Amino acid sequence: MTQGLVLTKQNKGTSFKTVSRKRFIELELRQNKLGEQTLSERIAYNLNLTNAIIEGCAQNGIGHYRLSPSLFPLLLMDMSLELNLATIKGANQILNLIKKIGATSMEHNVSLSVRPPILTANSSDGLASDNNDSIVKTVRQLDFYAHLFDLMGFPADYSNPIHVYPHLTSKDATQANLEGIVDRFYDGMVRCNDGVIQRLVVGSEEKGCWNCMNLFVYFHQYMGHKHRHIMPLGYDNLLDDANPSVLQGKRVMTSQNVDAFSKTWPDSVTPVFHWGNKGNPPEYERGIIWEMEKKDFTVAPKEIKVATTKRKATKKASRPKPSVKKILKKIEKTATKTTPFNHLYGQ
Image (cartoon, rainbow, N blue to C red; front, side):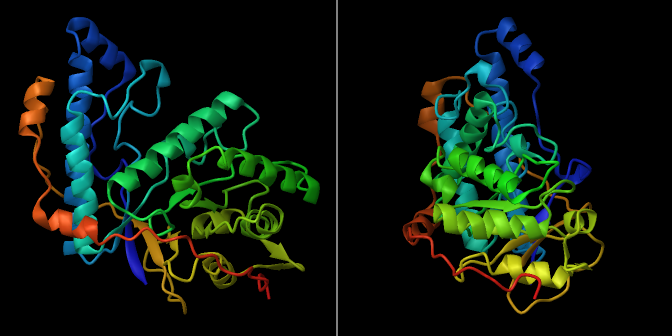
């Protein structure tokens, strides 16, 4: 078992900086590019904080970290501002910080994952949405995070998973309706870049039709047979408790779901699941990364200032250290290995 770290907003020892749309516009009106300058500085601070968190994970024996949804304030949630990470003020410095995170992660053997902020449990957006604008926003954000992992130097596979929910339910959970949702999800998924498809993991929901059993039968088995895509599944014990699966009149046990879900992942990759109860999750035959909230985790990042002009930022942009280059050169892009269907669910 590998312990993974999830930090919530309640953790005051690792506060990420944000900026509202209103504040951004106020700063832009006060002085040209001032809002963009402020946003860039806060993104740089958040990236530096992330690097410090990864180093803190290594010092505390934590082998995995889920990236904060607040890492890039405003950049992904408001398309009307037309902000672009590649052209934003201080872009070179931000790119170097992103690469530094990847190098630090690999140096300390701390893997990363993400749950995109647009796809929280209560979100109305999603790949299976009947609103095309919603699908466009979802695809845009998923593509962004896949590209982010690419910039960090990670392989395009499930070792750096992007976790999502189905985000579309049906009160009439018939086979036809559930298959229809999976078909719509798949149609939305293939609009994403390959880097998303090779990292995407679907998890069960707190209520509605997508409990562990239906998720396994339709998102893993049905999608595999119909669309030839083997979808790994993400397990969460709190969601399993809130929305249990019943098979032949008996509740499916935690151990059965963990075993079934772990077998949906490629053999070469350690599954990344979430454990929400106090204490440690039980041990299983297969190694599992268990993401857990930790409220007393504290780090102290250094303050970062973005240069006031692009020219200066370009001149002063730091070069990757030799150790970073060596780490990045060792990365091999390998095709995702699929596993046979697991027909043992509930047995």
